[in-house]
Amino acid sequence: MSDQPKGLKKGLTHYGDQGFSLFLRKAFIKGAGYTDDALDRPVIGITNTGSSYNPCHGNMPQLLEAVKRGIMLAGGLPMDFPTISVHESFSAPTSMYLRNLMSMDTEELVRAQPMDAVVLIGGCDKTVPAQLMGAASAGIPAIQLITGSMLTGSHRGERVGACTDCRRYWGKYRADEIDDQEIADVNNQLVASVGTCSVMGTASTMACVAEALGMTVPGGASPPAVTADRIRIAEQTGAQAVELARQGLTIDKILTPAAFENALRVLLAIGGSTNGIVHLTAIAGRMGIDIDLAGLDRLGRETPVLLDLKPSGQHYMEDFHHAGGMATLLRELKPLLRLEAMTVTGRTLGEEIERAGEGFNQDVVRPFDRPIYPQGGLAVLRGNLAPGGAIIKQSAADPTLMEHEGRAVVFENSADLAARIDSDELDVTADDILVLKNIGPKGAPGMPEAGYIPIPRKLARAGVKDIVRVSDGRMSGTAFGTIVLHVTPEAAVGGPLAHVRNGDRIRLSVKDREIALLVSDEELAKRSAEHPVVEPTAERGYRKLFLQTVTQADQGVDFDFLRAVKNTGRAPEDR
Image (cartoon, rainbow, N blue to C red; front, side, top):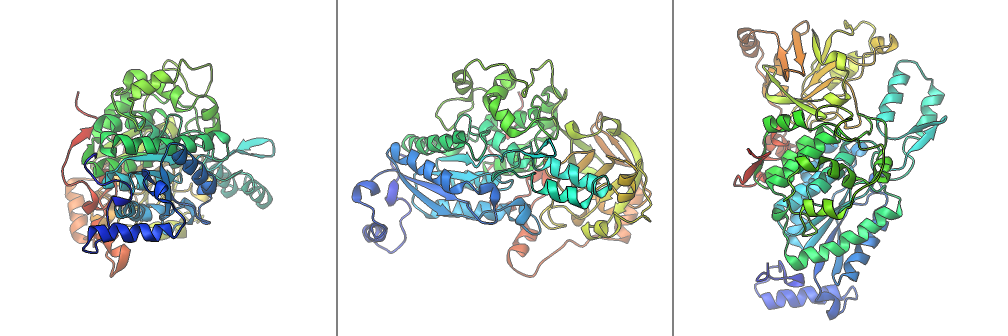
Protein backbone atom coordinates (compact mmCIF):
# COMPACT_ATOMS: atom_id res chain seq x y z
CA MET A 1 0.00 0.00 0.00
CA SER A 2 3.01 2.34 0.39
CA ASP A 3 2.90 3.35 -3.30
CA GLN A 4 -0.85 3.89 -3.28
CA PRO A 5 -2.53 7.27 -2.65
CA LYS A 6 -3.50 7.80 0.99
CA GLY A 7 -5.91 9.95 2.96
CA LEU A 8 -7.86 12.52 0.99
CA LYS A 9 -5.83 11.70 -2.13
CA LYS A 10 -7.48 8.27 -2.40
CA GLY A 11 -10.17 7.69 -5.00
CA LEU A 12 -10.31 11.18 -6.41
CA THR A 13 -13.51 12.19 -8.18
CA HIS A 14 -13.02 12.31 -11.96
CA TYR A 15 -12.96 15.88 -13.19
CA GLY A 16 -10.25 15.32 -15.77
CA ASP A 17 -7.64 17.08 -13.63
CA GLN A 18 -6.25 15.23 -10.60
CA GLY A 19 -4.86 18.35 -8.99
CA PHE A 20 -8.18 20.17 -9.32
CA SER A 21 -10.03 17.13 -7.97
CA LEU A 22 -7.99 17.22 -4.75
CA PHE A 23 -8.22 21.03 -4.56
CA LEU A 24 -12.00 20.91 -4.83
CA ARG A 25 -12.32 18.06 -2.30
CA LYS A 26 -10.25 19.95 0.27
CA ALA A 27 -12.16 23.16 -0.35
CA PHE A 28 -15.48 21.49 0.44
CA ILE A 29 -14.30 19.57 3.50
CA LYS A 30 -12.74 22.76 4.88
CA GLY A 31 -16.25 24.16 4.83
CA ALA A 32 -16.89 21.82 7.77
CA GLY A 33 -14.06 23.51 9.69
CA TYR A 34 -11.16 21.13 9.14
CA THR A 35 -7.54 22.34 9.13
CA ASP A 36 -4.76 21.17 6.84
CA ASP A 37 -3.15 19.42 9.83
CA ALA A 38 -6.28 17.31 10.38
CA LEU A 39 -6.65 16.55 6.68
CA ASP A 40 -3.05 15.28 6.41
CA ARG A 41 -3.67 12.43 8.87
CA PRO A 42 -4.74 8.85 8.04
CA VAL A 43 -8.45 8.94 7.24
CA ILE A 44 -10.52 6.30 9.05
CA GLY A 45 -14.08 5.73 7.87
CA ILE A 46 -16.72 4.66 10.38
CA THR A 47 -20.00 3.10 9.29
CA ASN A 48 -22.88 4.72 11.15
CA THR A 49 -25.71 2.19 11.26
CA GLY A 50 -27.81 3.99 13.82
CA SER A 51 -31.55 4.04 13.13
CA SER A 52 -34.73 4.65 15.11
CA TYR A 53 -35.91 1.35 13.65
CA ASN A 54 -32.90 -0.49 15.11
CA PRO A 55 -32.81 -0.70 18.93
CA CYS A 56 -30.00 -3.27 18.61
CA HIS A 57 -27.87 -0.28 17.52
CA GLY A 58 -29.35 2.10 20.10
CA ASN A 59 -25.91 2.80 21.60
CA MET A 60 -24.55 4.05 18.27
CA PRO A 61 -23.98 7.66 19.43
CA GLN A 62 -21.80 6.50 22.35
CA LEU A 63 -19.89 4.04 20.18
CA LEU A 64 -19.22 6.66 17.50
CA GLU A 65 -17.89 9.10 20.09
CA ALA A 66 -15.58 6.46 21.57
CA VAL A 67 -14.32 5.25 18.19
CA LYS A 68 -13.58 8.81 17.11
CA ARG A 69 -11.73 9.39 20.38
CA GLY A 70 -9.60 6.31 19.79
CA ILE A 71 -8.82 7.36 16.22
CA MET A 72 -7.80 10.87 17.21
CA LEU A 73 -5.69 9.68 20.16
CA ALA A 74 -3.82 7.47 17.69
CA GLY A 75 -3.28 10.33 15.25
CA GLY A 76 -6.00 9.62 12.69
CA LEU A 77 -8.91 11.58 11.26
CA PRO A 78 -12.32 9.95 11.92
CA MET A 79 -15.01 10.29 9.23
CA ASP A 80 -18.33 8.60 9.96
CA PHE A 81 -20.83 8.00 7.20
CA PRO A 82 -24.32 6.45 7.15
CA THR A 83 -25.14 3.10 5.62
CA ILE A 84 -28.22 0.93 5.53
CA SER A 85 -29.32 -0.34 8.95
CA VAL A 86 -31.26 -3.61 9.00
CA HIS A 87 -33.18 -4.77 12.08
CA GLU A 88 -34.49 -8.31 12.40
CA SER A 89 -38.00 -7.41 13.60
CA PHE A 90 -38.52 -4.34 11.44
CA SER A 91 -37.65 -5.65 7.97
CA ALA A 92 -40.24 -7.05 5.59
CA PRO A 93 -40.37 -9.65 4.21
CA THR A 94 -37.22 -10.56 6.17
CA SER A 95 -33.90 -8.98 7.08
CA MET A 96 -32.13 -11.66 5.02
CA TYR A 97 -33.73 -10.16 1.93
CA LEU A 98 -31.82 -6.94 2.62
CA ARG A 99 -28.48 -8.38 3.83
CA ASN A 100 -26.95 -8.42 0.35
CA LEU A 101 -28.19 -4.88 -0.33
CA MET A 102 -26.51 -3.70 2.87
CA SER A 103 -23.32 -5.47 1.84
CA MET A 104 -23.38 -3.67 -1.52
CA ASP A 105 -24.05 -0.34 0.19
CA THR A 106 -21.11 -0.93 2.54
CA GLU A 107 -18.76 -2.06 -0.24
CA GLU A 108 -19.53 0.75 -2.62
CA LEU A 109 -19.37 3.53 -0.01
CA VAL A 110 -16.04 2.18 1.26
CA ARG A 111 -14.78 2.14 -2.34
CA ALA A 112 -16.22 5.54 -3.27
CA GLN A 113 -15.02 7.61 -0.32
CA PRO A 114 -11.40 8.28 0.68
CA MET A 115 -10.40 6.21 3.71
CA ASP A 116 -7.24 4.34 4.67
CA ALA A 117 -9.16 1.93 6.90
CA VAL A 118 -12.76 1.43 7.99
CA VAL A 119 -14.45 0.65 11.30
CA LEU A 120 -17.59 -1.43 10.75
CA ILE A 121 -20.13 -0.90 13.54
CA GLY A 122 -22.86 -3.52 13.55
CA GLY A 123 -24.66 -5.90 15.83
CA CYS A 124 -28.14 -6.97 14.73
CA ASP A 125 -28.26 -10.32 12.95
CA LYS A 126 -27.63 -9.41 9.32
CA THR A 127 -25.56 -6.26 9.83
CA VAL A 128 -22.27 -7.88 10.85
CA PRO A 129 -22.26 -10.41 7.99
CA ALA A 130 -23.32 -7.71 5.51
CA GLN A 131 -20.48 -5.46 6.65
CA LEU A 132 -17.89 -8.23 6.55
CA MET A 133 -19.10 -9.25 3.09
CA GLY A 134 -18.86 -5.67 1.82
CA ALA A 135 -15.48 -5.03 3.42
CA ALA A 136 -14.11 -8.32 2.07
CA SER A 137 -15.03 -7.21 -1.43
CA ALA A 138 -13.71 -3.66 -0.95
CA GLY A 139 -10.36 -5.02 0.19
CA ILE A 140 -9.04 -2.20 2.39
CA PRO A 141 -7.96 -2.54 6.06
CA ALA A 142 -11.11 -3.09 8.13
CA ILE A 143 -12.03 -3.81 11.72
CA GLN A 144 -15.39 -4.86 13.18
CA LEU A 145 -16.97 -3.22 16.22
CA ILE A 146 -19.92 -5.12 17.70
CA THR A 147 -22.70 -3.01 19.24
CA GLY A 148 -23.08 -5.52 22.12
CA SER A 149 -25.84 -7.53 23.74
CA MET A 150 -28.76 -6.20 25.78
CA LEU A 151 -29.07 -6.72 29.52
CA THR A 152 -31.44 -9.36 30.90
CA GLY A 153 -34.75 -8.53 32.59
CA SER A 154 -36.83 -10.11 35.32
CA HIS A 155 -40.39 -11.44 35.14
CA ARG A 156 -42.05 -12.50 38.39
CA GLY A 157 -38.72 -13.47 39.88
CA GLU A 158 -37.42 -15.26 36.78
CA ARG A 159 -34.49 -13.91 34.79
CA VAL A 160 -35.50 -13.45 31.13
CA GLY A 161 -33.90 -12.20 27.94
CA ALA A 162 -34.58 -12.01 24.25
CA CYS A 163 -35.21 -14.00 22.39
CA THR A 164 -35.22 -17.66 23.46
CA ASP A 165 -37.46 -16.62 26.34
CA CYS A 166 -39.68 -14.70 23.87
CA ARG A 167 -40.35 -17.96 22.05
CA ARG A 168 -40.74 -19.95 25.26
CA TYR A 169 -43.34 -17.59 26.69
CA TRP A 170 -45.16 -17.29 23.37
CA GLY A 171 -45.31 -21.11 23.26
CA LYS A 172 -46.89 -21.06 26.72
CA TYR A 173 -49.40 -18.46 25.57
CA ARG A 174 -50.34 -20.49 22.47
CA ALA A 175 -50.85 -23.52 24.70
CA ASP A 176 -53.12 -21.50 27.07
CA GLU A 177 -50.65 -21.99 29.93
CA ILE A 178 -50.50 -18.23 30.58
CA ASP A 179 -53.11 -15.52 30.05
CA ASP A 180 -53.26 -12.18 28.20
CA GLN A 181 -52.08 -10.22 31.23
CA GLU A 182 -48.95 -12.33 31.78
CA ILE A 183 -47.90 -12.27 28.13
CA ALA A 184 -48.26 -8.46 28.23
CA ASP A 185 -46.27 -8.26 31.46
CA VAL A 186 -43.37 -10.38 30.18
CA ASN A 187 -43.32 -8.36 26.95
CA ASN A 188 -42.10 -5.40 29.02
CA GLN A 189 -39.21 -7.36 30.52
CA LEU A 190 -37.74 -9.47 27.71
CA VAL A 191 -35.66 -6.62 26.26
CA ALA A 192 -34.21 -4.74 29.24
CA SER A 193 -31.96 -2.33 27.31
CA VAL A 194 -30.73 -1.47 23.85
CA GLY A 195 -28.44 -4.07 22.28
CA THR A 196 -28.67 -7.40 20.54
CA CYS A 197 -30.30 -10.58 21.82
CA SER A 198 -28.77 -11.76 25.09
CA VAL A 199 -28.68 -15.44 24.11
CA MET A 200 -26.68 -17.30 21.46
CA GLY A 201 -28.84 -16.07 18.61
CA THR A 202 -27.44 -14.98 15.28
CA ALA A 203 -26.23 -11.61 16.60
CA SER A 204 -24.22 -13.16 19.45
CA THR A 205 -23.06 -15.92 17.10
CA MET A 206 -21.72 -13.42 14.57
CA ALA A 207 -20.07 -11.40 17.35
CA CYS A 208 -18.16 -14.49 18.49
CA VAL A 209 -17.43 -15.53 14.91
CA ALA A 210 -16.09 -12.05 14.07
CA GLU A 211 -13.63 -12.29 16.94
CA ALA A 212 -12.69 -15.84 15.93
CA LEU A 213 -12.01 -14.59 12.40
CA GLY A 214 -9.55 -12.08 13.84
CA MET A 215 -11.71 -9.12 12.80
CA THR A 216 -12.22 -7.52 16.25
CA VAL A 217 -9.86 -6.38 18.95
CA PRO A 218 -9.41 -9.08 21.63
CA GLY A 219 -12.48 -9.22 23.84
CA GLY A 220 -14.64 -7.49 21.24
CA ALA A 221 -17.46 -10.05 21.14
CA SER A 222 -18.95 -10.16 24.60
CA PRO A 223 -19.29 -6.79 26.44
CA PRO A 224 -22.97 -5.80 26.73
CA ALA A 225 -24.08 -2.71 24.82
CA VAL A 226 -24.62 -0.38 27.77
CA THR A 227 -21.42 -1.13 29.71
CA ALA A 228 -18.21 0.82 30.11
CA ASP A 229 -16.38 -2.26 28.80
CA ARG A 230 -18.16 -1.86 25.45
CA ILE A 231 -17.18 1.81 25.24
CA ARG A 232 -13.55 0.99 26.01
CA ILE A 233 -13.59 -1.68 23.27
CA ALA A 234 -14.89 1.02 20.91
CA GLU A 235 -12.02 3.34 21.78
CA GLN A 236 -9.48 0.54 21.31
CA THR A 237 -11.09 -0.30 17.97
CA GLY A 238 -10.63 3.27 16.73
CA ALA A 239 -6.98 3.28 17.74
CA GLN A 240 -6.36 -0.09 16.12
CA ALA A 241 -7.96 1.10 12.90
CA VAL A 242 -5.26 3.78 12.63
CA GLU A 243 -2.59 1.14 13.16
CA LEU A 244 -4.17 -1.05 10.46
CA ALA A 245 -3.98 1.90 8.06
CA ARG A 246 -0.34 2.55 8.88
CA GLN A 247 0.61 -1.12 8.50
CA GLY A 248 -1.46 -1.60 5.35
CA LEU A 249 -2.90 -4.75 6.92
CA THR A 250 -5.66 -5.39 4.38
CA ILE A 251 -8.61 -7.66 5.05
CA ASP A 252 -7.39 -10.42 2.72
CA LYS A 253 -4.45 -11.04 5.08
CA ILE A 254 -6.93 -11.79 7.88
CA LEU A 255 -9.84 -13.55 6.14
CA THR A 256 -7.86 -16.64 5.14
CA PRO A 257 -8.87 -20.33 5.05
CA ALA A 258 -7.25 -20.74 8.49
CA ALA A 259 -9.40 -17.91 9.88
CA PHE A 260 -12.58 -19.45 8.50
CA GLU A 261 -11.65 -22.83 9.96
CA ASN A 262 -11.27 -21.16 13.35
CA ALA A 263 -14.64 -19.47 12.88
CA LEU A 264 -16.28 -22.81 12.08
CA ARG A 265 -14.75 -24.37 15.21
CA VAL A 266 -16.10 -21.53 17.32
CA LEU A 267 -19.52 -21.71 15.64
CA LEU A 268 -19.72 -25.37 16.65
CA ALA A 269 -18.33 -24.88 20.16
CA ILE A 270 -20.72 -22.07 21.12
CA GLY A 271 -23.84 -23.89 19.93
CA GLY A 272 -24.14 -21.07 17.44
CA SER A 273 -27.03 -20.13 15.21
CA THR A 274 -27.66 -22.16 12.08
CA ASN A 275 -27.61 -18.82 10.28
CA GLY A 276 -23.91 -18.60 11.08
CA ILE A 277 -23.02 -21.17 8.43
CA VAL A 278 -24.99 -19.27 5.75
CA HIS A 279 -23.27 -16.00 6.65
CA LEU A 280 -19.79 -17.51 6.92
CA THR A 281 -20.28 -19.12 3.51
CA ALA A 282 -21.22 -15.74 2.02
CA ILE A 283 -18.28 -13.90 3.63
CA ALA A 284 -15.86 -16.63 2.53
CA GLY A 285 -17.27 -16.51 -0.99
CA ARG A 286 -16.32 -12.83 -1.22
CA MET A 287 -12.71 -13.96 -0.65
CA GLY A 288 -12.99 -16.81 -3.17
CA ILE A 289 -12.99 -19.40 -0.36
CA ASP A 290 -15.41 -22.33 -0.42
CA ILE A 291 -16.94 -23.60 2.82
CA ASP A 292 -16.89 -27.39 2.70
CA LEU A 293 -20.06 -28.70 4.39
CA ALA A 294 -18.61 -32.20 4.64
CA GLY A 295 -15.57 -30.67 6.31
CA LEU A 296 -17.81 -28.70 8.66
CA ASP A 297 -19.53 -31.90 9.70
CA ARG A 298 -16.14 -33.54 10.24
CA LEU A 299 -15.15 -30.67 12.54
CA GLY A 300 -18.47 -31.04 14.32
CA ARG A 301 -17.80 -34.64 15.28
CA GLU A 302 -14.65 -33.60 17.17
CA THR A 303 -15.67 -30.18 18.50
CA PRO A 304 -18.01 -30.31 21.52
CA VAL A 305 -20.37 -27.54 22.61
CA LEU A 306 -18.57 -25.86 25.51
CA LEU A 307 -20.56 -22.67 26.01
CA ASP A 308 -23.47 -22.94 28.46
CA LEU A 309 -25.74 -20.33 26.86
CA LYS A 310 -29.38 -20.44 25.84
CA PRO A 311 -30.84 -22.02 23.78
CA SER A 312 -28.36 -24.91 24.09
CA GLY A 313 -27.57 -24.13 27.75
CA GLN A 314 -28.78 -21.84 30.54
CA HIS A 315 -26.74 -18.62 30.70
CA TYR A 316 -26.82 -15.27 28.86
CA MET A 317 -24.21 -13.17 27.03
CA GLU A 318 -23.45 -10.93 30.03
CA ASP A 319 -22.56 -14.11 31.96
CA PHE A 320 -20.21 -15.13 29.14
CA HIS A 321 -18.58 -11.72 29.36
CA HIS A 322 -18.14 -12.02 33.13
CA ALA A 323 -16.58 -15.45 32.53
CA GLY A 324 -13.83 -13.92 30.39
CA GLY A 325 -15.60 -13.94 27.04
CA MET A 326 -13.94 -15.34 23.96
CA ALA A 327 -10.51 -15.55 25.61
CA THR A 328 -11.87 -18.23 27.94
CA LEU A 329 -13.43 -20.18 25.10
CA LEU A 330 -10.42 -19.87 22.77
CA ARG A 331 -8.10 -20.99 25.56
CA GLU A 332 -10.16 -24.19 25.92
CA LEU A 333 -10.35 -24.70 22.14
CA LYS A 334 -6.66 -23.97 21.57
CA PRO A 335 -5.62 -27.56 20.61
CA LEU A 336 -8.15 -27.48 17.75
CA LEU A 337 -7.43 -23.99 16.39
CA ARG A 338 -5.25 -22.71 13.55
CA LEU A 339 -3.06 -20.56 15.79
CA GLU A 340 -1.12 -19.06 12.87
CA ALA A 341 -4.16 -17.10 11.64
CA MET A 342 -3.53 -13.33 11.55
CA THR A 343 -5.77 -10.86 13.43
CA VAL A 344 -6.42 -7.12 13.18
CA THR A 345 -3.89 -6.52 15.94
CA GLY A 346 -1.07 -7.63 13.65
CA ARG A 347 -0.53 -10.61 15.91
CA THR A 348 -1.66 -14.21 15.36
CA LEU A 349 -4.57 -15.81 17.14
CA GLY A 350 -2.11 -17.98 19.07
CA GLU A 351 -0.23 -14.92 20.26
CA GLU A 352 -3.46 -13.27 21.39
CA ILE A 353 -4.49 -16.37 23.36
CA GLU A 354 -1.12 -16.31 25.13
CA ARG A 355 -1.46 -12.58 25.88
CA ALA A 356 -4.88 -13.22 27.46
CA GLY A 357 -3.27 -15.05 30.38
CA GLU A 358 -4.21 -18.12 32.38
CA GLY A 359 -7.90 -17.50 33.00
CA PHE A 360 -9.89 -18.08 36.18
CA ASN A 361 -12.58 -20.32 37.64
CA GLN A 362 -16.01 -19.88 36.07
CA ASP A 363 -18.96 -22.08 35.08
CA VAL A 364 -20.09 -20.66 31.72
CA VAL A 365 -17.42 -22.18 29.46
CA ARG A 366 -17.11 -25.89 30.14
CA PRO A 367 -13.87 -27.89 29.96
CA PHE A 368 -13.52 -30.55 27.27
CA ASP A 369 -14.29 -33.35 29.70
CA ARG A 370 -17.62 -31.78 30.73
CA PRO A 371 -19.19 -30.38 27.54
CA ILE A 372 -22.75 -29.14 27.16
CA TYR A 373 -23.06 -31.45 24.16
CA PRO A 374 -20.49 -34.03 23.02
CA GLN A 375 -20.45 -32.88 19.39
CA GLY A 376 -20.69 -29.50 17.69
CA GLY A 377 -23.99 -27.67 17.82
CA LEU A 378 -24.66 -28.11 14.10
CA ALA A 379 -24.87 -31.24 11.96
CA VAL A 380 -25.02 -31.45 8.16
CA LEU A 381 -27.68 -33.78 6.76
CA ARG A 382 -27.96 -35.22 3.26
CA GLY A 383 -30.29 -37.55 1.44
CA ASN A 384 -32.72 -37.62 -1.44
CA LEU A 385 -34.76 -34.85 0.21
CA ALA A 386 -31.71 -32.58 0.43
CA PRO A 387 -29.13 -33.49 -2.23
CA GLY A 388 -27.31 -30.21 -1.60
CA GLY A 389 -27.46 -30.60 2.16
CA ALA A 390 -29.51 -29.44 5.13
CA ILE A 391 -28.66 -28.27 8.65
CA ILE A 392 -29.94 -29.23 12.09
CA LYS A 393 -29.00 -27.60 15.39
CA GLN A 394 -28.59 -30.86 17.24
CA SER A 395 -27.58 -29.23 20.53
CA ALA A 396 -31.02 -27.57 20.78
CA ALA A 397 -33.04 -30.59 19.59
CA ASP A 398 -34.95 -33.27 21.49
CA PRO A 399 -32.67 -36.34 21.71
CA THR A 400 -35.68 -38.66 21.45
CA LEU A 401 -36.61 -37.22 18.04
CA MET A 402 -33.21 -37.21 16.34
CA GLU A 403 -33.75 -40.78 15.10
CA HIS A 404 -37.30 -40.64 13.82
CA GLU A 405 -39.56 -41.70 10.99
CA GLY A 406 -42.94 -40.11 10.52
CA ARG A 407 -45.78 -39.12 8.23
CA ALA A 408 -45.43 -35.80 6.38
CA VAL A 409 -47.94 -33.06 7.16
CA VAL A 410 -47.32 -30.59 4.35
CA PHE A 411 -47.78 -26.82 4.12
CA GLU A 412 -47.21 -25.38 0.65
CA ASN A 413 -46.07 -21.94 1.83
CA SER A 414 -46.22 -19.52 4.76
CA ALA A 415 -49.77 -18.44 3.96
CA ASP A 416 -50.93 -22.06 3.98
CA LEU A 417 -49.18 -22.57 7.32
CA ALA A 418 -50.81 -19.49 8.86
CA ALA A 419 -54.24 -20.56 7.60
CA ARG A 420 -54.17 -24.12 8.97
CA ILE A 421 -51.62 -24.56 11.80
CA ASP A 422 -54.08 -23.57 14.56
CA SER A 423 -57.10 -25.41 13.18
CA ASP A 424 -58.57 -28.14 15.36
CA GLU A 425 -59.33 -29.94 12.08
CA LEU A 426 -55.64 -30.28 11.15
CA ASP A 427 -54.79 -33.97 10.71
CA VAL A 428 -51.61 -34.13 12.80
CA THR A 429 -50.10 -36.12 15.66
CA ALA A 430 -46.94 -35.66 17.69
CA ASP A 431 -45.29 -38.48 15.69
CA ASP A 432 -45.75 -36.69 12.35
CA ILE A 433 -43.20 -34.50 10.57
CA LEU A 434 -44.24 -30.96 9.62
CA VAL A 435 -43.02 -29.90 6.18
CA LEU A 436 -43.04 -26.27 5.03
CA LYS A 437 -42.18 -25.48 1.40
CA ASN A 438 -41.31 -22.30 -0.48
CA ILE A 439 -39.56 -20.33 2.26
CA GLY A 440 -36.10 -20.63 0.72
CA PRO A 441 -33.96 -17.90 -0.88
CA LYS A 442 -36.24 -17.48 -3.91
CA GLY A 443 -39.44 -18.97 -2.55
CA ALA A 444 -40.27 -16.34 0.05
CA PRO A 445 -38.17 -14.50 -1.21
CA GLY A 446 -35.32 -13.93 1.21
CA MET A 447 -35.32 -17.18 3.20
CA PRO A 448 -37.24 -15.98 6.27
CA GLU A 449 -36.94 -17.49 9.74
CA ALA A 450 -40.24 -19.30 9.30
CA GLY A 451 -38.49 -22.66 9.65
CA TYR A 452 -39.32 -22.48 13.36
CA ILE A 453 -42.78 -23.85 12.55
CA PRO A 454 -45.03 -23.45 15.60
CA ILE A 455 -46.34 -26.54 17.34
CA PRO A 456 -49.91 -27.02 16.03
CA ARG A 457 -52.22 -25.51 18.63
CA LYS A 458 -54.12 -28.72 19.23
CA LEU A 459 -50.83 -30.46 20.07
CA ALA A 460 -49.51 -27.53 22.15
CA ARG A 461 -52.64 -27.63 24.28
CA ALA A 462 -52.06 -31.36 24.76
CA GLY A 463 -48.59 -30.63 26.17
CA VAL A 464 -46.44 -31.38 23.10
CA LYS A 465 -43.22 -29.34 23.31
CA ASP A 466 -41.38 -30.52 20.20
CA ILE A 467 -42.08 -32.15 16.85
CA VAL A 468 -39.81 -32.80 13.86
CA ARG A 469 -40.01 -29.95 11.35
CA VAL A 470 -38.46 -29.69 7.87
CA SER A 471 -38.21 -26.69 5.53
CA ASP A 472 -36.02 -24.88 3.01
CA GLY A 473 -35.99 -21.80 5.25
CA ARG A 474 -34.04 -20.60 8.26
CA MET A 475 -34.79 -20.19 11.94
CA SER A 476 -33.59 -17.71 14.52
CA GLY A 477 -30.52 -18.71 16.46
CA THR A 478 -32.59 -18.06 19.56
CA ALA A 479 -34.98 -20.87 18.62
CA PHE A 480 -34.88 -24.51 19.69
CA GLY A 481 -36.38 -27.84 18.65
CA THR A 482 -35.80 -30.76 16.29
CA ILE A 483 -35.84 -28.66 13.15
CA VAL A 484 -34.24 -29.44 9.78
CA LEU A 485 -33.41 -26.26 7.87
CA HIS A 486 -31.80 -24.96 4.66
CA VAL A 487 -33.02 -27.97 2.60
CA THR A 488 -31.16 -27.55 -0.69
CA PRO A 489 -32.18 -27.20 -3.48
CA GLU A 490 -35.24 -25.29 -2.28
CA ALA A 491 -38.78 -26.08 -3.39
CA ALA A 492 -39.11 -22.90 -5.47
CA VAL A 493 -36.39 -24.04 -7.89
CA GLY A 494 -37.70 -27.58 -8.19
CA GLY A 495 -35.83 -29.34 -5.40
CA PRO A 496 -37.25 -32.66 -4.14
CA LEU A 497 -38.94 -30.79 -1.29
CA ALA A 498 -41.36 -29.33 -3.86
CA HIS A 499 -42.82 -32.77 -4.49
CA VAL A 500 -43.44 -33.98 -0.93
CA ARG A 501 -47.10 -34.84 -0.33
CA ASN A 502 -49.24 -35.36 2.74
CA GLY A 503 -48.83 -38.89 4.02
CA ASP A 504 -45.35 -39.48 2.57
CA ARG A 505 -42.92 -41.06 5.02
CA ILE A 506 -39.77 -39.13 5.99
CA ARG A 507 -36.81 -40.51 7.92
CA LEU A 508 -34.51 -38.35 10.03
CA SER A 509 -31.28 -39.85 11.34
CA VAL A 510 -28.89 -37.34 12.88
CA LYS A 511 -26.58 -40.23 13.76
CA ASP A 512 -26.31 -41.18 10.08
CA ARG A 513 -26.57 -37.54 8.95
CA GLU A 514 -29.58 -38.40 6.79
CA ILE A 515 -32.85 -36.75 5.83
CA ALA A 516 -34.69 -39.08 3.47
CA LEU A 517 -38.03 -39.00 1.70
CA LEU A 518 -39.20 -42.62 1.52
CA VAL A 519 -40.54 -42.26 -2.01
CA SER A 520 -38.97 -43.85 -5.09
CA ASP A 521 -37.01 -41.85 -7.64
CA GLU A 522 -39.52 -42.93 -10.26
CA GLU A 523 -42.44 -41.54 -8.26
CA LEU A 524 -40.63 -38.26 -7.64
CA ALA A 525 -39.86 -37.93 -11.36
CA LYS A 526 -43.53 -38.57 -12.14
CA ARG A 527 -44.66 -35.91 -9.68
CA SER A 528 -42.15 -33.45 -11.12
CA ALA A 529 -43.43 -34.04 -14.66
CA GLU A 530 -47.06 -33.71 -13.59
CA HIS A 531 -46.51 -30.54 -11.59
CA PRO A 532 -43.45 -28.70 -12.94
CA VAL A 533 -42.13 -25.90 -10.77
CA VAL A 534 -42.18 -22.38 -12.17
CA GLU A 535 -39.49 -20.29 -10.49
CA PRO A 536 -40.67 -16.95 -9.07
CA THR A 537 -39.88 -13.78 -10.99
CA ALA A 538 -40.39 -10.04 -10.56
CA GLU A 539 -40.89 -7.24 -13.06
CA ARG A 540 -38.55 -4.60 -11.63
CA GLY A 541 -36.32 -3.29 -8.89
CA TYR A 542 -34.34 -4.97 -6.16
CA ARG A 543 -36.75 -7.90 -6.06
CA LYS A 544 -35.98 -8.66 -9.71
CA LEU A 545 -32.24 -8.47 -9.05
CA PHE A 546 -32.64 -10.72 -6.01
CA LEU A 547 -34.63 -13.43 -7.76
CA GLN A 548 -32.36 -13.45 -10.82
CA THR A 549 -29.05 -13.71 -8.97
CA VAL A 550 -29.48 -15.12 -5.44
CA THR A 551 -27.72 -18.41 -4.75
CA GLN A 552 -28.86 -21.37 -2.67
CA ALA A 553 -28.16 -21.84 1.03
CA ASP A 554 -25.03 -23.93 0.45
CA GLN A 555 -23.55 -20.93 -1.44
CA GLY A 556 -24.44 -18.40 1.24
CA VAL A 557 -27.63 -16.89 -0.30
CA ASP A 558 -25.39 -14.20 -1.79
CA PHE A 559 -25.80 -12.72 -5.25
CA ASP A 560 -23.81 -14.75 -7.75
CA PHE A 561 -22.13 -11.66 -9.24
CA LEU A 562 -20.74 -10.58 -5.84
CA ARG A 563 -18.64 -13.66 -5.24
CA ALA A 564 -14.90 -13.31 -5.85
CA VAL A 565 -13.91 -14.02 -9.45
CA LYS A 566 -11.21 -16.54 -8.54
CA ASN A 567 -11.25 -19.39 -6.05
CA THR A 568 -8.44 -19.04 -3.52
CA GLY A 569 -9.03 -21.95 -1.15
CA ARG A 570 -11.47 -23.87 1.00
CA ALA A 571 -12.26 -24.20 4.67
CA PRO A 572 -11.68 -26.37 6.47
CA GLU A 573 -8.59 -27.21 4.47
CA ASP A 574 -7.68 -30.84 3.79
CA ARG A 575 -4.88 -31.59 6.23
